Picture 1: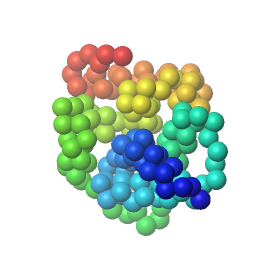
Picture 2: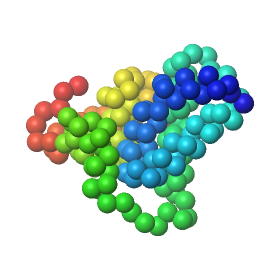
Picture 3: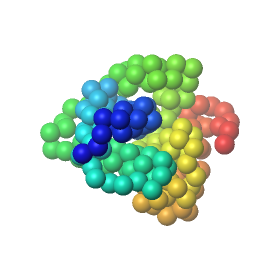
Length: 160
């Protein structure tokens, strides 16, 4: 078990990241909150020792992505959430960038992951490959394709 101090520090550092990843995958505020609680419960119960802050952050990202995928694959998930609900939350998260956020949310999951990790979290292709379990060249390909899709959706240039 982790101390209350460790838990509070982790929540301050990673709460926004976990919520954003959940919204990218789930597009549902309620599902996001469920996964958010599950991820931090796993952290509390985890005995993992992290080498540094980046290792800990990568752990949170990996656990969150896996939890989202598990929820999406679950037998009981038979309903869909309207895009309007996702956009409402996205405007709260980034009111100045709602058009971009909407375009990112409309991308297929494999592209959303790399866009989020690169542009919102600042990871390199090598780091993303490690986190997502993909080859570095695959990550570069996904980034290139996602940029092209965003250019088409936003009707202009997307800067790297």
